[in-house]
Amino acid sequence: MYIIQLPANNFDNERFRNSEWGPEAAASLCEKIRHIKAPFGLTMGDLIDKTSKDTISKVMLEEKLFETWYHGRTVLIGDACHKMLPSAGQGAINAMQDATVLANCINDIKSLTRSNITAALKDYQDQRFQYAKTQFETSKRFAVIMGGQTWPDAVVKLC
Image 1 (spheres, rainbow, N blue to C red):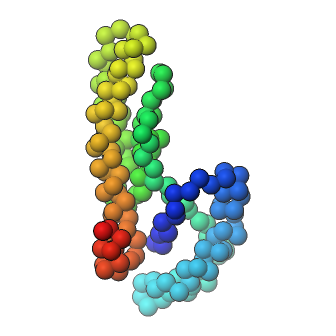
Image 2: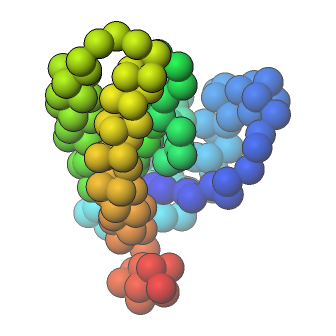
Image 3: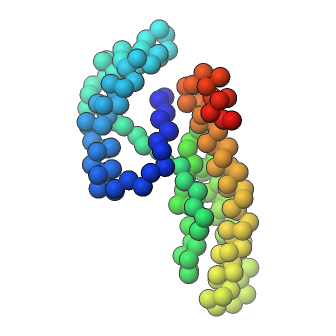
């Protein structure tokens, strides 16, 4: 696995979509990582050369923690409000915890007025935000460790 941490830029969506997802992007990435060592004394280049070009793709993962999880009667859960890298395995469990807390908050609504619905959604975010933020930060740190850096490099990045 080769992980590149991209800067948090606001990409022009059309330019980003066209430049980062096509076969040219996958080929460009393959060239950048050819030198990286792979298991059994090989390099990534050795593995790339033995792989059919039409089966190579580039996968982009995004990490983001949103400050706002609800508006009006619309509410977000899981990756919609806290996208975590899969390195720490926390995405699915956080989505399930969101769903459980949200269901309890909705169940506790006494009457379906706008203010009661808003209060329930605020209660959901208040209960989940800090925990999700902690898991988000843990996931980021774990990605650095699992990303193939040497231990000294990982420690420097974590500090």
